[in-house]
Length: 197
Image 1 (cartoon, rainbow, N blue to C red):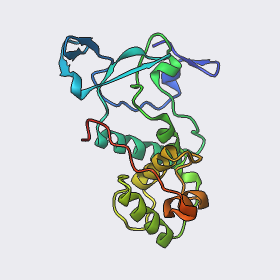
Image 2 (cartoon, rainbow, N blue to C red):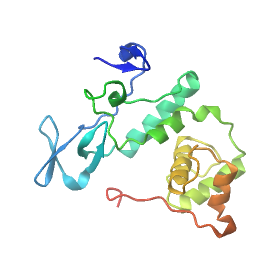
Image 3 (tube, rainbow, N blue to C red):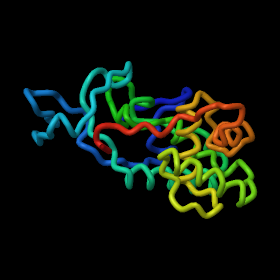
Image 4 (cartoon, helix red, strand yellow):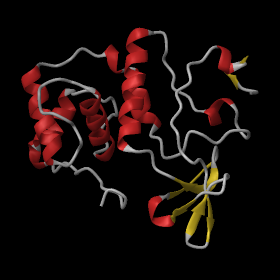
C-alpha cells in the first residue's frame, strides 16, 4: 500500500515487516469491545489508549510470548544487519491509513532490542547481581545466570523507565548503583497492570 518514510515511498519493497497479530483497534459497545470483523471482547481484557497516530480506542494487549518473540527478532535483525537503526510502525509510514501497531507496543523497548548488539556485555557476576535484584523488584528477567539476554535487557530498560534513568537497556554504573539502593535511594518495583493481576 501507499507509504513513505524519509522521502522514500513504497516502504514494503525496502523494509522488513514483522507482524504482531491482534484484533486491531476495538470500539466500545456497552460492556464489550468490538473488532472490525465482529468479534467481541470483555472490556476487562482490553486497554483504552488515545494517541495522535491512532486516535481513541480500545486495544488488546500483546501477550508476553508475542513481545518476547518480537524483541528477540529485533535483536537478531540488529545483530545480522547493523545498518538497521530504526523500528517503525505502519502508522508511521502510512499515517491516516494505518493504525497498527497498537499504541500499547513500547517503542522504546523495541529500539533497545534492535540496538542491543552494539553494547559490550558486562562481567557475568555483575549481571547476576543485577538480575537477582531486578527479580526481587518484580521485573521478568528470566534466569539469573549472568547472561545478558533479551529478557534481561528489556527488564533493565523497564527499570530505567520506571526510575527516571536514561533508557539504554544496558547495565551501566548508574543503573547498577540505583538497583543496589546506594545513598538510601529506594528503587521502584515493576508496575503490574490489571491483566497481570
